[in-house]
Image (cartoon, rainbow, N blue to C red; front, side, top):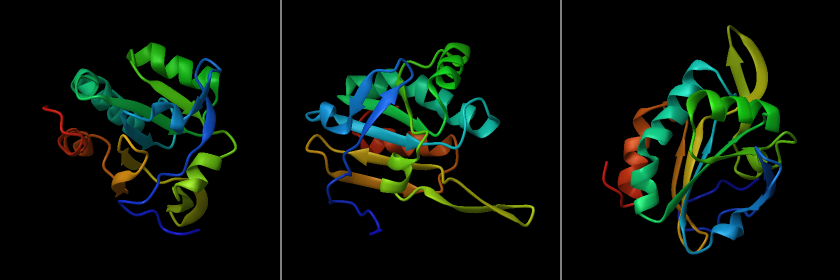
Amino acid sequence: MQELTEGTAAPDFSSKDQNGQSIKLSDFRGKKVILFFYPKDNTPGCTKEACAYRDASQNFEANNTVILGVSPDNEKSHNKFIDKFDLPFQLLCDTDKDICEAYGVWVEKSMYGKKYMGVERSTFLIDEDGNLAAVRRKVKPEPHVAEMLELAGAKS
């Protein structure tokens, strides 16, 4: 797979959100999109990241920017996560990892010397025309949200 770079077209996709609603990236043409990939619902780092986006969501919305979270979790898991932390944005169910693979975030990881496949925490800012405006890989759960706000042209 070719490395995704800023200025190139973002891979389009079709997926279901937490309510089973079909979502395509192209549905959001004319808006900026924060597409953040995270490993798993209700885990400490992922909760910090999702809550940081929640806390900044009005600033993103005021700047014509939609937030979409993506993980391999299913609808039931996403709904529990949304309800527990009052998340105001859609979470996409990538149970087959097609979106993760298209964006190059389904990678080999290592913990305590054991190798396994998982989601590399990454965030992509997609402009109104569907092009990659920013690509951030291996991000820290909270600090990168402020950077994404700035890149999207919003005020924190």
